[in-house]
Amino acid sequence: MRLLFLGPPGSGKGTQCQLLSNELKIRHLSSGDLLRASVAQGTAAGLEAKTYMDKGLLVPDPVLIAMFKDNLSQENCHNGYILDGFPRNLSQAKSFDDMLSNLHQFLDCVINLEIDSEPLTLRITGRRVCANKNCLKVYHTKFNPPQVENVCDDCKCELIIRSDDKEDLVKVRLATYFEQTQPLIEYYQLKKILVNIDASQSSQNVFNSILTTLKELTKTH
Image (cartoon, rainbow, N blue to C red):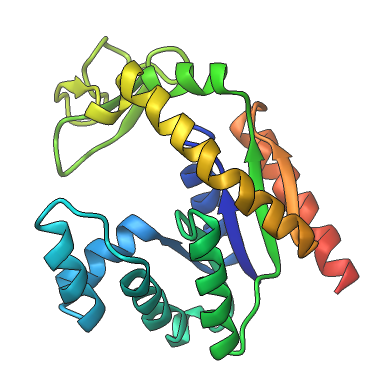
């Protein structure tokens, strides 16, 4: 099964992708993780991406497409995969469709995690991350607090706020996401492969909703 997740920052997209990856035994391909891995492995796409990343520039779409093509062609993606973080806009989606066509692949379902901006801001600004680079465990001041305030339960290091989790930047991130992604939602709706999931529920209920949706999908295929 080939799946794509859409969802604003704080919607729980990464968590749901990982849960589903473990459940279905298929790869979770995050654009950020793939970029870092491609650079570390020294692939052609990774080396080209690095020239932009080193200058603090966005990696161009053709380079991202080449990176995804490298990965989706691998044997460990033959049984399916879960895409997270790409495509981010309509132009990328169309280029991505062309690439999938060249690989004789198609998306089975696009899962759109829906949630209002207000609870998203609370979710993101309350997030705390362990400062230990070998740990990086994530907490939340309200929903998943540590046993001792601002101290990691596991390694006892300090918990910090990521720079892009501060409220002023969160508002910019959310505005950018909704502006760029609304056309993408409509694009996949027209293809009749988009499913909306209420992401305001508990993480487990969101996961159960996704599983129910996918089981219904397999019945109709």
